[in-house]
Length: 200
Image (cartoon, rainbow, N blue to C red):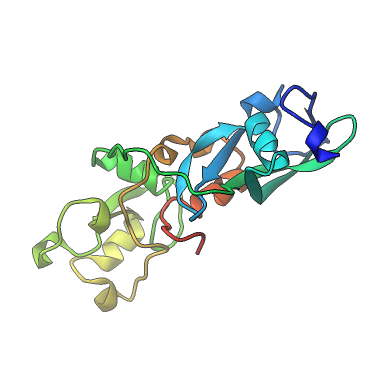
């Protein structure tokens, strides 16, 4: 029965060849915790996430595809969980705006074509000469090719479109380093970084 499973039980990742994760314990896994209204709150360990799911305090929204096992039960390792009840969000610390942080927010990826590489810069979506401001909602990472193509024009004039609207990043999720987690897990997390009502 699920009610007999708790945090003291021994859970082990089923590490088959080719799996993305290679961790020594559930405590090293990071799981994204969403509020009941799908707002990102914080990260917790894999062990904590499993305990919350089995106790009915959270539901598994997305899995990373890796099964984990106890002596009596097998479940899929959660990547994103959602709390069963309303939780008031804590005070929201704000991220300082900088070019480096724009790169982090956009995962070092051109927001026009999706290119990631060395030839990246930042671009004003609405050009400064056209009244565009320097800030979170008007700055994106762009490759040199797209930046040159856009030039001093608006999106409509250049024919370019954004992969997603630029917004101020939410904390503490902003500090998740995508280079330290499997791409599939990061893809599950980032759906919720810029959304206020769930994944797009």
